[in-house]
Image 1 (tube, rainbow, N blue to C red):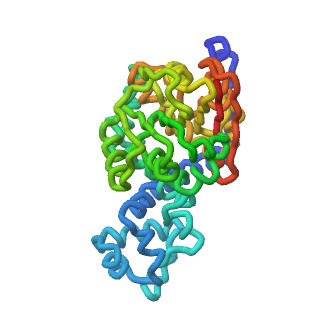
Image 2: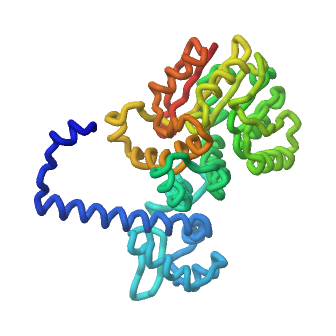
Image 3: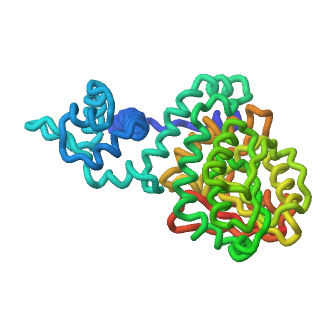
Length: 362
């Protein structure tokens, strides 16, 4: 609000009940954020996987089965019991993972939300730099986020392994062409799992992954080599400077456009790189460009937080536009059209409500 609006605004006087409710919510947030850190530990140490196959057991047996230090495991079990995720039998001194939590904290699939909670400590590591950016402008760099590419790759793999070939690609209408043999590029490929998966599934086609992280590309090449793939390559490239004219039949971008420093330029480069009858598949956050439409999203607070602490911050840190995670379907569609795409379809998948699927053609 401007200064005039500020002078006219009178803050309502809160009731004692409303203050107590606000305090209770803050305590709940404190507890939940603490539990998030413990869940990340359980995920990364394999404790959840261990508990999923063990009967009710004491902390010593659980620690031995997981190959971990008993004292740390016992304290962790206390926190998980307090969170209602672990059931504790005091008379026997045993712990067991509550059955309703097994599918949401274990396994390689998209149901395992413990994997997603790894973003919480990742964001915590950059709090001082983000606070400084609030005061002085600027932002962060990708180097400020250890394990970022690994976490993103694991998140993407969970979706792609279950859905990319069977569900997502058919949205483009390009499956038959991929079987016959076409040229495909992925923008911001990260550790390259999507390209390697497609290269395995469609050996007649060729695939190129672009990213500016040498570390991520090393992982991509290692996976391709281990799979014996000869139809995929990975190139170190700032995609805002990509120079490829009518080279690819299909270009993909999985959750990669909104944190670009210059997203409009990247989209124009993608349009230029496509053949005249090509297809661009852009997978990005399923949200609105209007805040008032996002309030009811179950994950809205997370989206604005991850934007503040990563997606917007890394873009601004490069002197970029700071588009942000929640640029929304409306703005994304407008930017695709501004980049020269004549047709833009936005599709959704029931099994992946978190993402929107943009099918754009020149």
